[in-house]
Length: 168
Image (cartoon, rainbow, N blue to C red; front, side):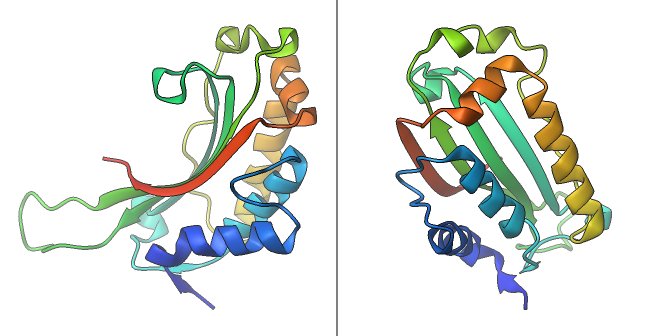
């Protein structure tokens, strides 16, 4: 049953908790990923359709100013929200990101995380169901193909955060 997009972070939190993962204290990256896989298969209302890339998934990694230069791995779902007056010639959907951010302590195994050729998987708007399952498997394989990310995957994050934030 579809849920309103504004409840998406709560839905993700519920899935994490059912799997024994606390959103603000993730200790197992694989369990968090499995919860993400389940979450991105939940239908949402109030977003643009697949023809307009209304529901995209992405994984990101690296060190950035906004995360205090800590090594980070995140799983996100970008939503193009259908609000406002569509008759306005300048109308654009509002973009919101549901993101589980996992931060790690510095470690030699991933000290060069910024040297990985990519910093994310790119946004993918595969439809819910088998197409999205296939994309998630590809993302999982890609991340495990980099030794730095595979090492992070086996480590315990020192901090985690689940948020729904505007992403314009």
